[in-house]
Length: 265
Image (tube, rainbow, N blue to C red; front, side, top):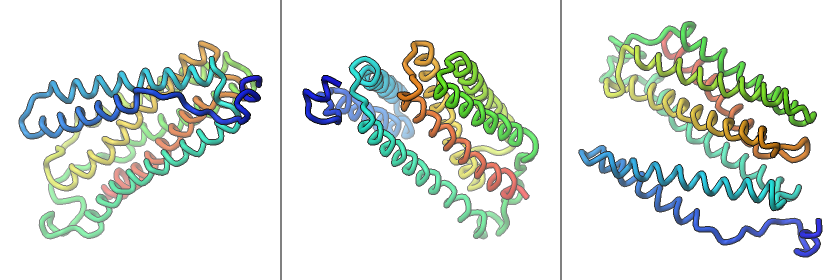
């Protein structure tokens, strides 16, 4: 409170930081190295870029956590801004997946003569929707329940229940990834075997990548729970992770209905 009076306002004016520049350079190395690798170059450059991106994420978010928990800069007004920022980020993610759904529906609703004029293309053996995909749906929906349980426990000040619920969420996220990896390993079609494989693996693969990110996000929140960072009235870091996880849940429901169920009928 004294710091607020000294500043004369409730906002957080962030100190100069080298991490945005480092992150931009790391992303450039990762993207440039990835393009070079796709054209027969070495894998070492994108690997270095990826490690630099991870390092930047670690030190940058470490500073954000310190600002919130130690320095007390995340006032209620600042938290409102953080919420708006997270909402806009998720909105950008929605548009990202809209692009993949657009490609899929364009190919499925208007199949060209190149694929025989039918969808799925002739010769494609699709996954049975009510087998592993349905199991993964149950896993992900259950994880949405446990992360909500965790949120309520944090708001009630029950750290013990919050830890249990978040452990279950992280474990369920890892199970989802394992089931999807098994599914990919037994796919009857490949990524480069026509438009069906390309659209299927791009849409479901990017969703799987988001599940990995969300699991890492929640794992950090689990560590922070053990450290006592989250209070009933001050836990936006967890809220952001929970919002992201629910977004992943909703995207999967669309994938299950549109690609696994309708797309294979």
